[in-house]
Image (cartoon, rainbow, N blue to C red; front, side):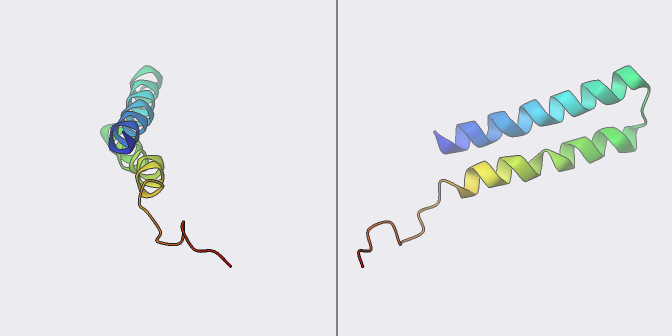
Amino acid sequence: MRTTLAVGVGLVVALAGVASTMTTGGELSEAIMWVVFAMVPAAIVALGGIPSGYSHDRD
């Protein structure tokens, strides 16, 4: 589930950025930058699903 969400977030950001680049007449390098930038929120979502090991600790 978390992987699907991460891929979905990455695709939405990448597609929005590429669409914005195309409608404003941007260059290919700007579109590539948006695709790379889309990996950041996707990675944040994906890392949120990794168990830390501290969820069952009690003080």
